[in-house]
Length: 98
Image (cartoon, rainbow, N blue to C red; front, top):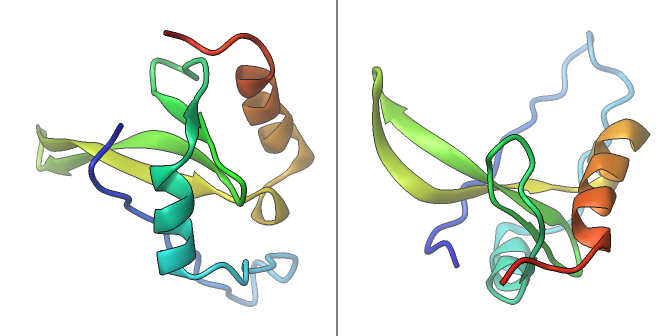
């Protein structure tokens, strides 16, 4: 399982009035991620399902050079479109990879 959790920040602006920020804390998400179960990949990225959120592998770059692949972004159902949530639900609905 990935060693680090990198959470994407959402900055609410007047251009995004429908964005609802989750009440989950970083500590809660980290604990949830540590017990999350693996799902099928989405677009070649590892995916996990936790009790609070889905998680997807993210890559950290320094310019064009990848410096970390052991990070994940939290995908909170209440902060995403129904289409996005369905894609994660579908990835996690079938038998999990070994």
